[in-house]
Length: 438
Image (cartoon, rainbow, N blue to C red):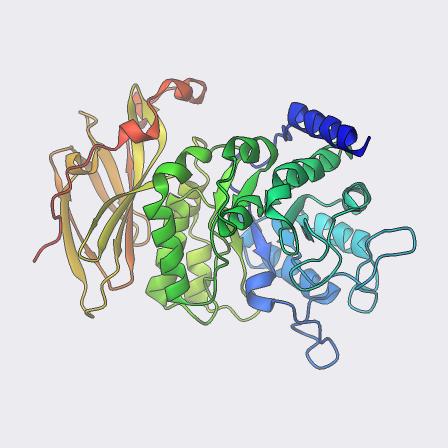
């Protein structure tokens, strides 16, 4: 009977799929984990522990410091918010000393600010930090999240069998949907299967999750960021087609403004995450962030690239001697021609900026009437350039230059017609010659 019940549940969850209408563009917000980790010592470190106070403070700052106006809307708890044991009825309980008013009260506070509330669980017996997982209590936990008016659920995968994730993640999504509460569903499903040598079923992942992790956790360092950039570039043929409105690849949090990235490297992460159509989830202490890093996170022109309604993830189109070029098709669109965001990345460590020269045509931009080109960090407008025009940019070591190349507004068409255009793999036709000045 148990086997039959599991089969029926799997069929039901597959039939319904996710279909929650959420995350039509990549989610934006603030997430505790990378900056504050599992600090539960509120006695000795009350300002930095995982607590009700921390999340209320960050919600206040997201609004007061202009992040909400720039598009950041989620305030997300990660691991370590729970009691170590469930209630006698099997319910999950927020830590009573660190969340003395309960999560419904915290949720109400965040919603009163015009923001949304996110929470963390784990498809396993325990979370990564050893707190109760959802395994065996899926319906209970989904109901609790709905009762607390949660808007976003991240489900990790520690202490779980990766083989069972093909069933378990859709099952928990089914229970979330059954509550009737709209909740973004963030899955760690593929990354744990990849670790285990299993080839993830991305058709099912797309059907059941709004976003998913498929590589290592980001750490507060340039070397960590570089490994993520390389993973997404080296595996783009299998990764890029999975992204689109409602379902996104998640390269992990923004660490801009913390300790490990320089100013140039911080600009690089923000620009590359926009090219990748990545969720923009800041994990930084908003009380102490320096103004120049705040400006990177609030760069509305780069955010507009990330939030482009086409939802096409960009690709690395050139890599040679430490110089990379990444490109993403964006709106506006005319006939078979896209506008583009182009990022020039300098991975060199020789201590001097590199000049990169390239024509628009060599980048795959061939619209006959040209493109209006703008530098999104320097606010330089190059005017309308034809495909034959050569652009020369100077890129700092471990830095980036990101350009927006727009087809002119009088030539664009309605968004409802975008779907007729050619797949992304047919858009990029780039000659792999060296664009770098010797």
